[in-house]
Image (cartoon, rainbow, N blue to C red; front, side, top):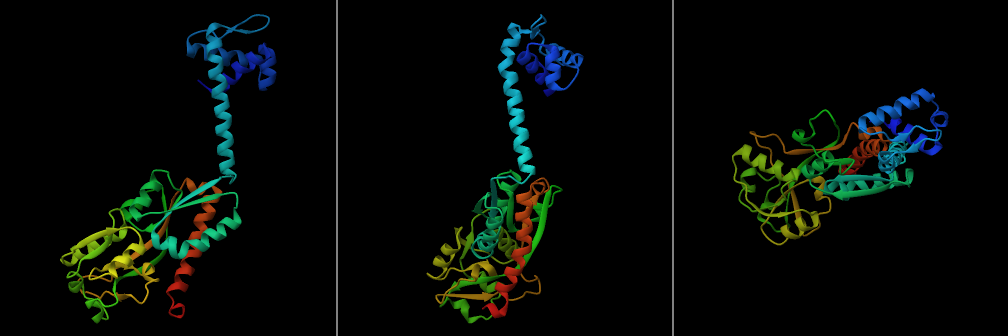
Amino acid sequence: MRLEQVEAFLAVVETGSFQKAARLCGVTQSTVSRQVQALETELGLPLLHRQAKASLTVAGDRFLPHASRICREWRNAALEIRELAEGKQTELCVAAIHSICAQFLPPVLQRFCSRRPQVQLRVTSLGSDRALKVLRDGLVDVAIVMNNPRLTLSSEMVVRSLYTETVEVLMAAEHPLTEYREIPWAALADYPHVVFKDGYGMQRLVQEAFAHLGQQFYPALELNTLDAFRGMVRQGKMISILPKSALLDADETLAVRPIAKDLRFSSLEREVVAVTTQDRLEIPPIAEFFTLVCEEVPPLVARTFSPSSR
């Protein structure tokens, strides 16, 4: 069944004439006749009585509401896609890791909203692996996450590096590990760790580092907000290994120390990337937001991490 066949049938019903239907559709009368005949052949029953004024058969009467709905749905779908291509999207969904949401995304959101006030932004804070999954599932348009090549290395994914940052140790201000200027990995294995929940890239990164070095890793508690991390470690002996951008708001009750380099292991870092898909970049608001993130976030990070900003 082809759309023009259904449209030809509806035109005959509307005008009561194959000749008038042809003028309405902008084709010849023989073309309308062939289209209706092809439709009747496919459905298996005649749809129209060929009389001085064409009228519906029993089958045609049953088919008419379906035909009207088919054409109406097609017009609505075509209009929606056309508006999407013209940049008339009304909603844009973003999934980002916590540190991005807290530190670097707000100025970008403000700028985008001033440029496209008609687009409603929906921002969700998620772990990296979860954010990439909802992007693949079509639930969000852009993900800003810690890079995981196992999840982003596919032809439809568009990945842009934003920045790379070290990870450091967060602990209470009076914690025994504060005696170190740089904490060795062996010392980190002596204390229970507060970690991100499963599905967060940081948990995977830290676990892989300890496994690579053959050190014991003791994840005592799983959390998913930076405020909860700070609240737990300031209470006692628990520590947490977190990215530098997540440690910018540490107060005087907390201490931050870098991790000492190990000959068996290069310095522990994470790469933060913006990710979308090829088809989404065909939609103007998404392409504009993605470009804005790639242009605005790296300078914000550089200013935040520069010595003069501390």
